[in-house]
Length: 383
Image (cartoon, rainbow, N blue to C red; front, side, top):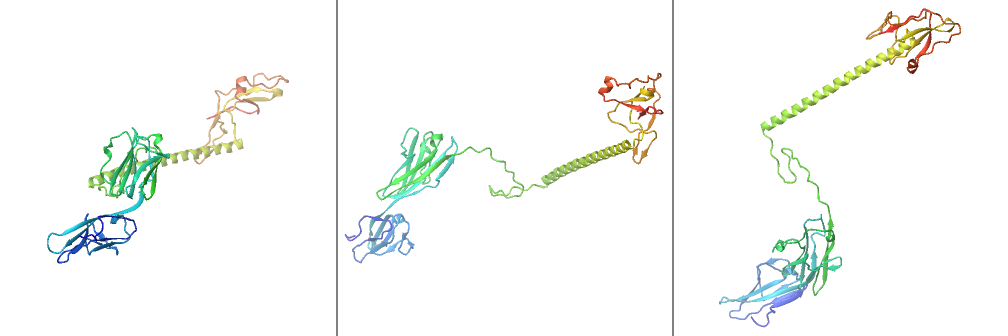
């Protein structure tokens, strides 16, 4: 290799164009090939990726961070040994922040993952801020960073657990454990290098613990949306057993329905009978077809009039001197009460100026009334 070759380390800005050159002397004239040291393909100016390229120069247009790495130019002319040169290409760019979860919710006493991913070159300085103040490492709060070339993974943790939770995986994360009221709020992850500065924010909100999960019943043969499989169909014995249970349930329901219908029919029949009796009573009462008292006492009134002391009954009956029948309804019969009925006329007629008798206190309390009796009135008892 001669002095006309490119330097061993080339630094360019992202989106710039760069040309790598390599010259070698020998006889016969050596052939030069380009490869990447990591084995990945080389992206050409027309967008293709090839494993190797021939030529003394390697031109790269609109370089990006994916072009960053070590390149090898290998010269050979068939006479061993072959010679090579290693050229490192560094692409500088401003920090770029990626926050997968900008809003995180968790109840008190649970674990929370806060993470920020940064890409920057040259190497960036990273730190956390909470309530406009830098988060410092204390006995309770610690910060960690995981670096992979130009990629940085920022994590934040609150003391109360072992630091062994951090893995060497690129997607490892930090945890905020044993949350307290003062831990909720907005966190900022900040990254800066010689080119620029950027930041990302994560809001940690308090939520409440859920209640017991609902019971999920999967019907036979129905696709379970959560687990993505069909449950087993029942066998013949299970089908017969299920059918017997359904038949028993249906019979019980039919019996209950029939019982309810019979009860309703009986109630309606009783109501109809009651209305018919009430109707007959009202019609007999309007016609005044007979005496309407069950107890009577005869006393002498003024000027030779006779008075009958009638006490109202709880349910008045319509009494007639003869039996009246109607289809389906029997009228109450009236017969002479020769044993219990008191005499309607007193043995001694009262004086001319004697007032009508007054009811006793017990009779007055029951609402007894005095009615003048006809000359030929007799006492009746309704049954």
